[in-house]
Length: 144
Picture 1 (tube, rainbow, N blue to C red):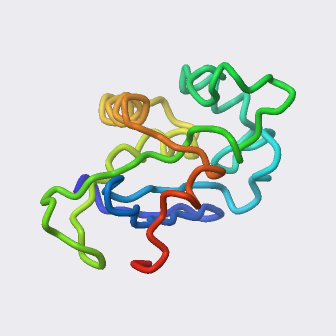
Picture 2: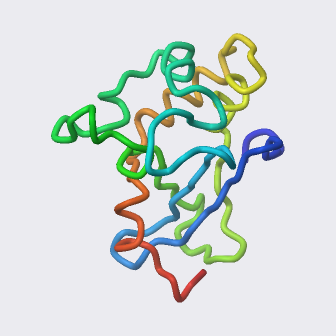
């Protein structure tokens, strides 16, 4: 749902099914050169620029229990859990809404976040998100 999904150059998007009991899918979106064990770039941009332009803060990405010296993309809660529009729909044809990604595209295009992108950013912030380090225990690898 939302606008047609177009993954920008130098970006990768992966959607993984979650185990029964957790339900839904987790959406991973990174720049191809983002260092997962560091926090210098995010979505292919300087992470400080992402924070400044989006209005996000470190507390939006990391639990307070993680000291700033240990904050990396590995333990940042960046990856939203998405639910199907219809709970009975199964992989490989779930109807998922990717409109929340518009704010990332706007940042990458270096344009002002319009109302749609701001709504996507709000949806992203309000979504349940998990870190890469927590995905392995929640993904249904047999359903991939």
